Every structure is written in structure tokens, then in C-alpha cells.
Amino acid sequence: MLPASPDDALAPEWLKEPADPNDLAPGVWPASARRDADGELELGGVGVAELRARFGTPLYVLDEAEVRAHAARIKAAFDTAAAAHGVKARVYYAGKAFLSTEVARWVTQEGLRVDVCSRGELEIALAAGVKPSRIGFHGNNKSVSELERAVEVGVGTIILDSAIEIERLGAIAERRSAASNGTGSDGYVQRVLLRVNSGVHAETHDFLATAHEDQKFGTSLEAAPALVERIREIPSLKLRGLHCHIGSQIFGSAGFAESASRVVDLHAELREGGELPLLNLGGGFGIAYTAADDPTPIEELATAIVEAVARECEVRGIPIPTLAFEPGRAVVGQAGVTLYEVGTTKEVSLGERGERLYVSVDGGMSDNARPALYGAQYSARIASREGTGAPVLARVVGSHCESGDVVVDHEYLPSDVTPGDLLAVPATGAYCHALSSNYNHTPRSAVVAVRDGQARVIVRGETLDDLLSRDAGIAARRTKEATGVRAGEGEA
Ligand SMILES: Cc1ncc(COP(=O)(O)O)c(C=O)c1O
Figure 1 (tube, rainbow, N blue to C red):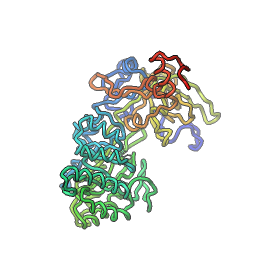
Figure 2 (figure 1 turned 135 degrees about the vertical axis):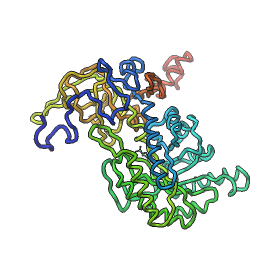
Figure 3 (figure 1 turned 90 degrees about the vertical axis):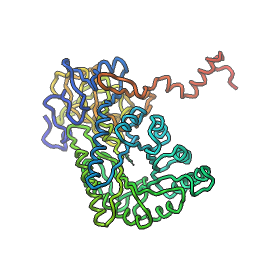
Figure 4 (figure 1 turned 60 degrees about the horizontal axis):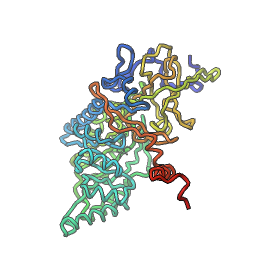
């Protein structure tokens, strides 16, 4: 029983005690998640016991059909919403959420383009066969070599972030232009967008409109016209439009609508100096991490956002531009489940406030930094079997040397959860592997794709040897051993 005062309660108000602590909340788990006759969890038709036996734990499992279904649904939602106003939509997959050649292949087969924000992400997209013209390149501090590579391969759109970057990219594009036909300005032209801050900052379930956006990305609405003028002076840059991304894990459409109104205002003003056929409104569409989360369906969000843009364009008497969007989390988040093995459990008595069961698993903040980074909430279930005990308030924690090493802060688990059980944490497809680290010299886990009863590695896990061989002392000792020189010999 929870104490009467919510302030004093161990469980947050949003967490409801489930009738069955083995249930799989719809919308949180991939559609393929089910328990077999013995209660074992299956993902994409593959049982978790088989996954543990073949690949070990912790393990990221990604349901291919689920990724494809989300990509297709999001594309259809924006295509339909845009078509209702006689315009076209482009949907880029924001690869920062999780990028591998397989995922890039799946989403491009579903009609998405790909958005990257580093040289590494660019190379993965290229290796996957994504057409360079269908790649967008982001970042507040792209290096000269990153921009050179983007121009060299012919990336379709580079999203400019600052005055310095305009000059940096301008010089690179001018050089390529001159090299391509020797005439300079008539050669290569790099298409660009300019990223602006609309002053609307949306986080989770709400949005906040601020006068000055105190953050590192983009340029203010006030500063944008001068930057646009400069871009238009550089012959080898072609400004296609504005870009604005207001935040992530956003549940409602109000923040997007408010932001669209402000950005369309600037878009209308800038059209007077030249064509602007595109408007990119970024990503940020929220997903359910727990049964308490209730994100707005993407079709409703798409309709509301496109309607807001259409309304603002109509008021200003300008045509609606082609609209672009960049979902990351909404494409892959729900498709991912992380499997852990339970190592220890302990009950902590907190006096009159009640008891909490600590469940330690064999991963933690190295495979999912989000709870420690921004207090993200997740849910969990015993996966290798159905628990038989009554629901108890639990906290799933990792094995790292940080008390903030929490995987699932608040969850009801069956009281008989025990060492050796497999524990599954859903909705880990986005920003988990992407943000993973080697903290405590922990090798990063493999990513395995499941589909139609088959499982295959799409990103191999690191071995301990991968990590040890980066240490100069160990590497030097191995070289000496390999060449027959005993340790300590040959030193000055
Ligand atoms: C510019 C930009 N576009 C798209 C995204 C993707 O956001 P989400 O994964 O929340 O859809 C981000 C996330 O940080 C971003 O910075």
C-alpha cells in the first residue's frame, strides 16, 4: 500500500500497480512481442532464451518489421497531410537515434531519406547505399574535413548552423566548383538550409516559448536575414529554405504549431529576396516508454503541423513550400528491447514509506545512458518466464560504479524475480546503443535484428580484447611478446 501523501510515496503518481506484472503494455512493446505457452517472451518470433544462448546479455534486440512499420506509417502520415494541401512532404530518418547499414537500408526501402550529423554517420549511410542526394547533414560544428567529404560525395542538403559555417562551406563548395569545370561560379552548387531557433522549446509533454533561445544550435530569427543574404552572395551555395527543430519526445502539436507560425513569418520575409522551396520542421515526435505515456498518433500530429503551416502561408499570401521532417525516435524507439540477466536482488526497507526491491542487471548506464542523462523513465518485465509473485515496487539498476546507474527507476515486478532471470526493457531502440559507452571498461553490446523467427547480428558486440588492445601499454607488451622480446627488455 502506498502512503496517502504523494510527496512521501515511493512510487510516482503516474505508475499504476498492474493487475498482472507480466503483461506487455500495447504501444510500449513491439507488436511482435508475446509470451509463448510457457510464459517466455518472444520478439519477432524468436524466444529470449535462444537470444541469450546465442548472443549473451546485455543484448539490444531490434524488430525489423516494427522499424519498417513505423517508417512507412510516418511517411504515409506526412504524405497524406501534405497532399491534403496540394504539397509534397519529405521524411528523413534522423540517424542519430540509431544508425547501422541495415537500418539505413530498411528505412530507405520504406521511402525515407537519411539525416546524419557526423562523418561516421555519413559513412554508414553511404555504405548502406543511400543515395547522397537523399542525405541531409546536420551539426553545430561540422569540421572542415566533414564538410569536404559531404561536398565530395554530393550530399543533397547541408543544414548550415552559423555564420562561420557559411564561410567554411562556401569556400569548400567554391573550390569544388572551380575544380569541376574551371569556371568557378558556374560549376558545383551545394544545396543548403539555414537552421533557425524559433524561440519555442518543446520538451516531453509541454512546450515553453522563450524570447531568446539560450542554446548552441542554429541562429536566432532576428539574425537569420543577414545570414541568408550572405548565403545568397556565394555562387556555389544554393539556399533551399529554413530548418527548425524544437526538441524531442514531444507529445502534442501545440509547440510545433507555434514554432511553424514564427518560422513561416521569416520564410515569407526571406522569399522576397529569392525562392525558398523547402521548409524543414525537424523531428521530435514522442513515443511511449511506459504504459503511462500517451503520445499523440503521428497522423494527428502530421495533420496539425501541416495545417498550421498552411494557415500561416495563407495569411501571408504565399505558397506552401515542400515540407520536410526528421523523426528518429519515432522510427526505431519502439522496435528495440534490451535483454539483461538479473545478477542480484535486495529489499530495502524505507520505514513507514514502504519497501523497494533493487534488481541489479548485467548492464546499465553504459548501454542506456538516458535515465542518468535526463531522468528518462522506462519499464521492465521478466522475460524468460512469467513471474508468480505479487507485484512489488522495484528499481532496476546496473552494474556500474555510480549510484545514478539506474535502468528503470520505478516499476512493479513480480516479487519472485531472481538471479538468472532474463529481464527485458522495451522502447530502447533509440538513443541507447547510439549513446552507449565503455564506462568501467565494459565492452559495448551487440545489436541483433529479429524477423520472422530469425535472429542475426547487425552490429557486433565488442570483445574485452577490443577494449584491452586500445591500451598502449597492453598493445606494446603484446607486440614485444609477438616479436619474442620479453617484457622489460629493450627499454631505455
Ligand atoms: C536537428 C534534429 N533533427 C531531428 C532530430 C530527431 O529527434 P527525434 O529522435 O526526437 O525525432 C534531432 C534530435 O536531436 C535533431 O537535433
